[in-house]
Image 1 (cartoon, rainbow, N blue to C red):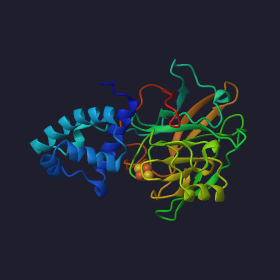
Image 2: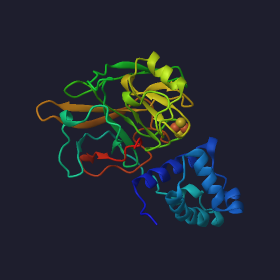
Image 3: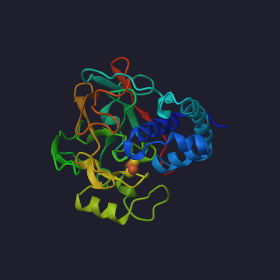
Length: 298
Ligand code: FES
C-alpha cells in the first residue's frame, strides 16, 4: 500500500470543508446504515476522484468517522484534524524553499504548470504562487483591478502583481465552490488553453471563450465541477459554478534582496472560513515553505 501524502491530507481537508457545509451536509445516519461506501460516494461526489490509494486512505478515515457517528457524540467531521482558534492579525512571513533558503522572485519560472503552493495565513490554507506570462512565456505585468463578486455584485480592489516584472501573484488554492484543493484545482498555462489536451485538461469551450473575452492567457481551473478563475485579473470568476473569486494573498517584493513576503490576505474569505483569521492553526515562525508538486498534466 502506498504511503499517504500531502495530497491525501488536502483531500481530507476538502472533505472536512464539504462535511461542514449545510448544502452538502454529511448524513451520519446514512453512513451508519451503508458504511464506508456512503463515505466513498459522498467524497467522490463532493470533493473529487478516489483512486485505489486514496480509497485505502479513506478507509482509515472511515474508521474514525464511524466511531464518532455510531457513538453519536460528535459530528463525523470532527474526527478529522480539528480547526484551531486562528490569529488576531496577519503575519508577515518570508517565502522560503524546501531547504529553508529565501525564495528569489527572479528565479520563479514563468507559466510553470507544476503546482507551486505555500501555507498562509493559517496552517490549513494553501495558496498558489504564480509567475504569469503570455503565450510566448514573456512576463505579463498584472495590473491592480476591481474584482466583482458575482454572488453579491460587490467589488473589491486587487493590488496587482509584484516582482521584477510585476508578474507574480498569489491566490488561495481552495476552490470557492465546494473547497476542492490541488491537484484538483490548478493553473492552466497558455500552452494548455485549447480543447482536446491530454487529461486532466478539462477546459470547456465555454471556459476558453470566457478566458479569451477577459484577455486571460491562462486560467485557474477546478476539475471537481469546472469553476474557472482569471489569475491575470485578481482571480475573478470566469465560469461557475463558483459565485466567488479566489481570495488573494498580498505579496511584498524586496528589490534589494529579491525576497518575497506574504503580508495579508484579501478579497473574500477563504472557503469554509468565516474570516481569513479564523478556522485553523497559526503558522509557526516567520517563514512559510514553498513546495512544488506533481505536474497535473504529466
Ligand atoms: S469545488 Fe466545485 S468547482 Fe471547485
